[in-house]
Image 1 (tube, rainbow, N blue to C red):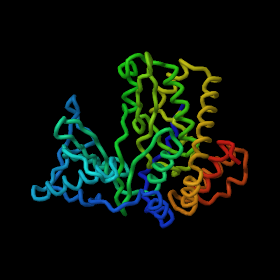
Image 2: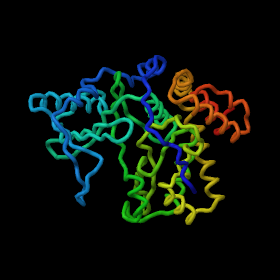
Image 3: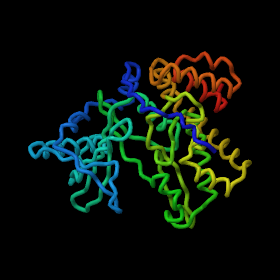
Image 4: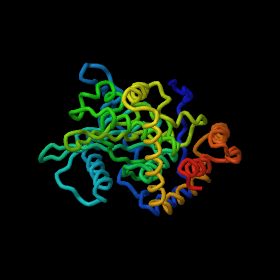
Length: 343
């Protein structure tokens, strides 16, 4: 398999439009937050972080001004309580660290929260708001087996941490994680993940943009692949970009699956996932159609990308009318229904 090699430029961030803002308020995703993304940009400096081998990572440690340290930490704890406990007070929490990553579209701050009694810790992220990422998060919440917690306030997006082993680390040594490796179950999950991404047009799912959640199941293990990057929701113009199987970074997963399941099994697993997607669609139909209604009116890509993807999907589905779609939202709605047999 060859990578699409078509994500050549850093994607622009798109503002939250009026229709999307109305939707977010209705589902209580848009709230007034105690701290904004830009507040964290006013720091004292950054210090490079190194991994266990002494190599610099993409993350840097944020150093706050001493006069602002206590108040900023209090606000960060309040924000964590909003994302995990609906704003209810959780005792004995503190901020262990604030990290920043300049790489990528959202340029996230990673906040490490710890319990002062038992030193248990958790993370969450503060990012720049981007409408395409918000659509991606909400579609993940409704159409995947996972639930996503996030909040938006003007230019600030707050997301919970998604637990799992980075996909590239996992496939480099899958026997290291979760005890007994189950090759068929892992292969099946990659096929299902590939189907989920394509059906809802989530792009750029290279191995470092998803994690593997390993779950013990009696004497064996089960796997779930979870997206952690939603910036490329319905943005690019080539349909292969929405199929994880075509990225060179995912070639180890493709080769692994080919070793352990045959083509007939892969088709069966794709059909199973489409059946589950149909059920999720119907369970969230009112909310999903409200979201797609907002998305149809929104600009989250270039017109050249919309035209190219419209023509490719029209050819793929043998539905010439798809080529006339004028927005990514309209394309996603029609593609999703065709893919799931809902029309």
